[in-house]
Amino acid sequence: MSPALDRAIANYASSYGTQPTLVVRAPGRVNIIGEHTDYNDGFVLPMALPFEVVVAAAPRVDGKVFASSEGFEPVEFMVADPVDQGRWSTYVHGTGAMLIEAGYSVAGWQGCLASDIPAGANLSSSAALEIASGLIFVTSANGSIEPSALARVGQRVENDVIGFPSGIMDQLACAASVDGAASLIDCRALSASPVPLPGGVDIIVMDTGTRRKLLDTQYAARRTDCETAAASLGVTALRDATLDQIANLGDDRIYRRARHVIGENTRTLEAAAAMRSNNAVELGRLMNESHASLRDDFDVSGPALDRIVALAQQINGCLGARMTGGGFAGAAVALVQSNSSEAFVAELTKSFVAPDEQPAVAPTMLYTVRPAAGASVITNPNR
Ligand code: GLA
Image (cartoon, rainbow, N blue to C red; front, side, top):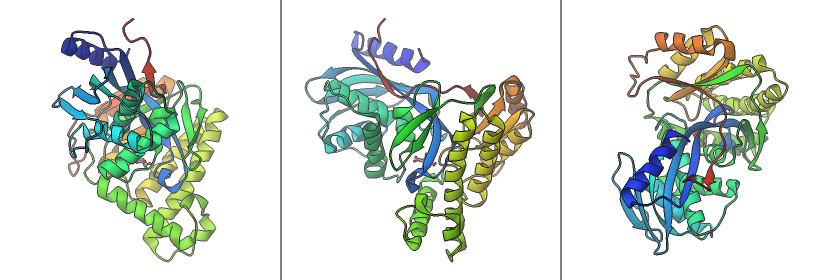
């Protein structure tokens, strides 16, 4: 049982005086490699985290939703009503609205949410909220939904309700991951295949404690740069372009954006091959290259991420490190030999402080994680 699962069930029991009849969970993710490639129809290689959003609930027949979440104002709404903007529940209600728009039957419910995913750390706490909400709405109506369809609905929430032009990686990682493996995802085909980690290594999530400010506007700007590059080359998406083709892109900034995406797609496929042949050293090398390309060509790293990655890369037993997710702040990820990982955590804890120009607003946290299962309905929550 995750801590969030315990709390959500306990909160339900104390709010409603009965046990929940429907419980769902949806994990956050860390992306091992394949950054800013998803909205270019490319490849990504994320894994689900052992931190999750849980909703403990019971279906209602009157179409109403009563939802509470630790530390937030409880909300009440009709699924079919217009979605209120700017609240924590916008993600929840927005998911119901996007499900209806996509033709799914949804029902109301009463429930308590709990989350163990650090918010704003680029570990996909909002995608997990969307996927958990989607499962509750659909299951309350006795229906079911395919993981890739649910991921699309989650992306619609980001794009059409919240107004953030995200790709689909986070929602797919959350909905479609399998226990014990990362997933190589083709973001054009929306297909995911499990790729186990090489033996003898740990994945360590390094949350700098800094939080993103620039992400929304800069993210949209990067997306536009990529679309500009694809349009000048006459291709559907940068997935279809080659390094030879981009040599003629006149604008240096657009050229560097395209060079990152093309290189990152190649690195991601190479990383999956390295993992499959148990070559952790090669995987680490590709992660280091990915960070340099995100920092220098795509321009989405930041002072705290650069600092923690540089420190990590110098520690004994670290095979590779890079920023993860959208960038600018939040978390990075390292690949460390298992027999060095305790010492790695101790040394990095001692040496990292966020830079003065980008102070931390949350504690710096290091988590050694193994790949968790994608979102699921917990059939027997009250064992
Ligand atoms: C955010 C977005 C994803 C993806 C990453 C960068 O997490 O939500 O769709 O684009 O940034 O790889």
